[in-house]
Length: 251
Image (cartoon, rainbow, N blue to C red; front, side):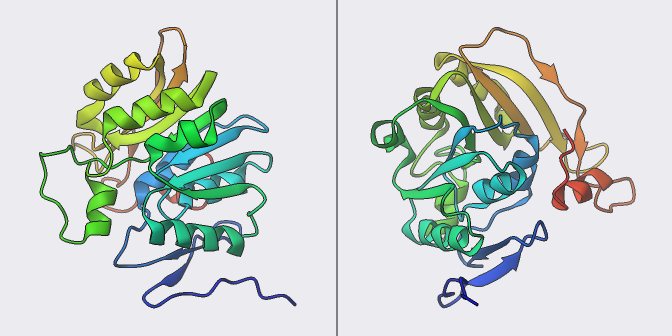
């Protein structure tokens, strides 16, 4: 039997996603996906045969999970860090998805010119830390993933607006306290907020994350979904979050 498992380089590990037998290659000292990416793939709604693109794919977690859930969709995925893009490519091969997921090493702002437009969906889990307002992680790879060093919110939304066709959707997760800024910048790109879900770390806490669904050239009107709380009253992982990690669609 052919062994398709890619070579793991020094320091890398193979993580079991515990969904449909999927695995992903990651490096503990580089960017690793977190709960926000898992929440975003659950929140996203992709139509049959959708042509989608992931901006800043990291190690490819969003395309891999969404292609497993939606057998007809295809993904382009953009990543500026060479080693992350390489891990993503090897994970795509490992999961036998190379005919549906294509990884491109480039700055996301160059995607419209190099890949064209007309996408049905754009997904993005961008760096949260606002440029100039946070301390950078001493590990450059983690700093780039978490802080606005090589890109920023305005660039992300501008790029998404150029990539989407009329009626296309942008699915994004970000810090809840930056929601007003996100809506303002999205409006410049004719992106209208249509669905919103706040994510709370625990009962009685302020919202930490916000999941957003924007429509290109859409009319005003937004559905605010029931909140998601990641821990219950006892400090245990909330039941809905457990279901999401098992690969169940909850919204």
